[in-house]
Image 1: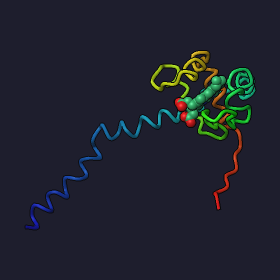
Image 2 (image 1 turned 30 degrees about the horizontal axis):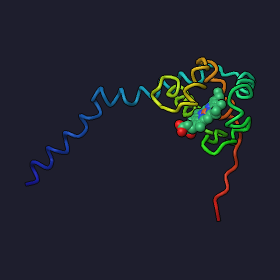
Image 3 (image 1 turned 90 degrees about the vertical axis):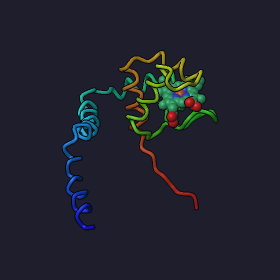
Length: 126
Ligand code: HEC
């Protein structure tokens, strides 16, 4: 009875040698390394937001229309991922697709820097 149980347990450490697990750990790490190497230009981001995004999302990231998202203080990586998804068509929305196609990789980096850099304070409802 105790024999088979013991053998099952000894097999478990083999998982740590699995190259796939190693890959799962390394992929996010290379992403983190790539992050800071882009140098985002906050003021160029502000100018782009004023020119293109402000009408719907506000300069401060507080949406001016009910169906647009608030963007102030949003995670930078999330903003970049959404803008890339709108641009490629992976995420579908008529207005945002038009807007995102106007943006270069650099623009995306910069506007994401702008909106993610806005400080937000949070107050829970009482
Ligand atoms: C004409 C209005 C309009 C303009 C201009 C506009 N947006 Fe949007 N945006 C929207 C709407 C509406 C949505 C919600 C789309 C959806 O449901 O997917 C949205 C969604 C987004 C989202 C996804 C938010 C989330 O929580 O997932 C991001 C990021 C975004 N916009 C960034 C921008 C940026 C950056 C600009 C300027 C370069 C911009 N938008 C310009 C209307 C606009």
